[in-house]
Image (cartoon, rainbow over the protein chains, first blue to last red):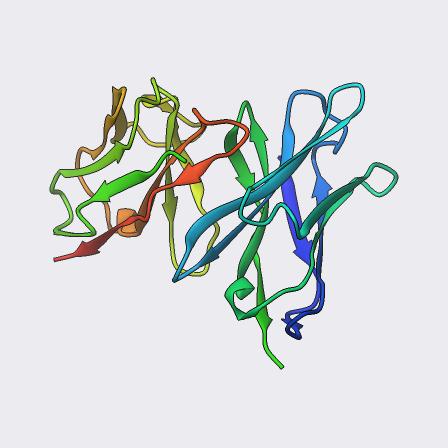
Length: 120
Length: 108
C-alpha cells in the first residue's frame, strides 16, 4: 500500500521560501511508471496542481505556469522522498498542500495534506 | 487551459436516492476524466478514472460515463458515507492537470 506523508513548517513569512517534504512508503521515487506531484487546495483557488517529477532513466520535471518562476521540486532517492520549494510567497499561497502520486497523470494516491499559512 | 465546470454546486438528497453529478470541459478531453471524493479533513480519494473505470475498492454503486466534453458521475443509491464533496479532474492537457470546483453532496 502506497503511503505519502508531508512535513514542513506550517507558518511562513511573506517573501520567504515555503519548503515541504513528502516521504514515500510502499513505492520508490525512482519507479519509472509513476510521477510525484505537489497539489494545493484553498477556498479561493480550489485544487491546484503545482508540479511533478518523475524518473525515466533520468529525472524530469513539469511545473504549472502559475508558479513556474518560483517553484522547485527535488527528488531524493537516498531517502525515498521528494520536496517542494516555493519562493517569494504571499498570503495567496496559504493553502493545504498535498503530495500525490500519479500514474499516466491520474492521481491515485494522496498524502493527508499539511496546512501552510503565509503571514507575518 | 482546460476549464472544468461542475454542476450543481450543491446537491441535496436523501439516503437511498440516486445522485447525478455533472462535469463539463471547455474543450474535448476524450475520456481523460477522473472523479474524486473528498470528506472533511481528508485528502481526495480516486473513485473513477478514464471516465468510466472504477478505482480499486470502489463500490459498484459509483459509476461514470461520458466522453468529449460532458461527463456524469452517478451514485445509484446513496449511503450515509457518500455525503461529501466530489471533484472531477482532467489529464488531457498533460503535463498540466486541472480540477473542477466541486459539487457538495449534502443530506436533505
